[in-house]
Length: 122
Image (cartoon, rainbow, N blue to C red; front, side, top):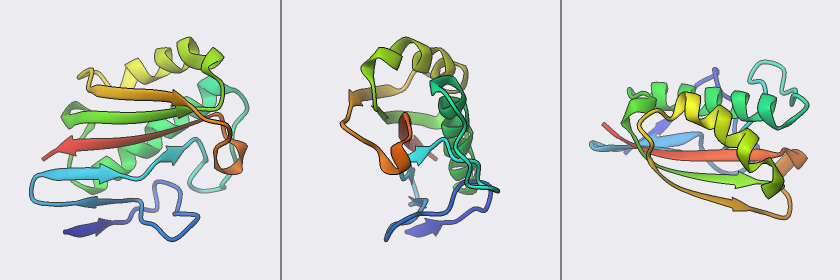
């Protein structure tokens, strides 16, 4: 098992890692739409979903895989009213249509609008 670390995705804001890789899997921690360089969070669900997807992609890349290898995602939304807009962005990245759970939660860290975690096959 190897811990994944990349400066191209936001650093963990708690006692966890950005992800792990094993011989057969890459597992990302939840990624929100924060800019990895500045920590800034853009306005709106589309902008946050776009950056969250990019952040997931960078952690996947650190594990040697891409979006095409993702087999499962879990998505968290602060408002299920954003579901359609979130899906439009998500579909551009997760082209393999992985298995997915998408739930609305009361709040997310830093009051972001979405967070995405992924499991990919190596």
